[in-house]
Amino acid sequence: MTDSYSSRAGDLSPSPNGYANGSSPSLTQSNNAGLSPVIRKKLMGYVGFANLPNQVHRKSVRKGFQFTTMVVGESGLGKSTLINTLFNTPLYPPKEPLPPAAERPKTVAIESIGADIEENGVRLHLTVVDTPGFGDFVNNDDSWRPIVENIESRFDSYLEQENRVNRQKIVDNRVHACLYFIQPTGHSLKQLDIEFMRRLHTRVNLIPVIAKADTLTDEEIVAFKARILADIAHHKIHIFQAPSYENEDEETLAEAEEIASKIPFAVVGSDHVVDTTDGRQVRGRAYPWGVIEVDNEEHCDFVKLRQMLVRTYMEELREYTNDVLYENWRSEKLLSMGVAQDSSVFREINPSAKIQEERILHEAKLSKMEAEMKMVFQQKVQEKESKLKQSEEELYARHKEMKDALDKQRADLEDKKRRIESGRPLTPEKNTTKNRRFLR
Image 1 (cartoon, one colour):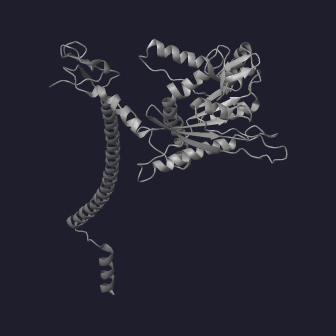
Image 2: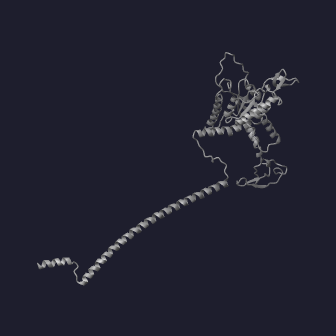
Image 3: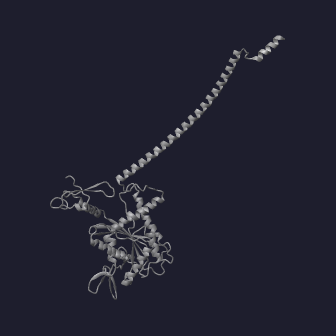
């Protein structure tokens, strides 16, 4: 089968007449942004590479997934309970309060809990990083530092694995999401909250969560969320936002907008099943005035949080961590070590523009060489002319000297000739002397 290639997913589905999308083969050309023409052709029949997503799905299911989340917040905000509720797994056992005489830790601790969970044949290795002691001290200066160091040490570990000779078994233990628990004060962010998020928003996907939202009324929650978002915007803190893609259907776009409108999530956590007044058994918290249902969207934002963190954007959290956060840290790390790289190495290059650029550079190089050669030639010509002029002056001086000598000799000869012709002696003084001697 000839001319049966296509780069559009819409041309892949076969039709009863044997052509993709029920149309005959067509040939179109596009030339975008000066790139070389790309030939797009419709398939003349079903080929099969529309099955690639299924192949990727089977490989992913066979390999399994890894996800690491971090929970940060002051003690007593229900972090462990919320994690157990999110993954419907008792990752954290019930905590017993310390007796009054027990010694409290003086620094922020970092604790990790790993678990392999499976749902409908899909395996997930979940790691939860807890930070007990954060915000529990009188002086909380630099309480964020152990957390930043832990996140960067995980980046260091991944970078070391990438630099190995054998990279077959790379374990991704980087933190993909950080749930930051905010006290339900109803006022605004505390200075500790702002400083923590400022320090970490370039290293991890921040997801702010209002803990124990059942202590606030609906109006207080709306006002509290607005003040939190205002503080985040004022301090230029980047929190995770659900990405948007082209050609999304209206339902997906509406779902993404609804999730974004709930940030920061006002949640209530509970892994206990309680009975409602109408006889239903739900996960929630029972109060004298009623029951707070964790999975009821009218009661809290737990469902939207789970939808963003697990059901919809878990892979986006992993990709953003790898492609943006880790790459930025890696670049800073290598630059600080003195490793530099030409920024044009991995730049997308238009071949025709590259050829034109090389031709211009070549012509500029030739022009420079021609100018240098012309300048050298002129310099040598000037030096030669100077030497010739000097030689000419020397020859002229010698010629004049020789001419003067010849003129003098000729004048002497002519004088001698006149003397001889006139009969006078050539040396009269000598003859006179001889005559005087003879007379004596």
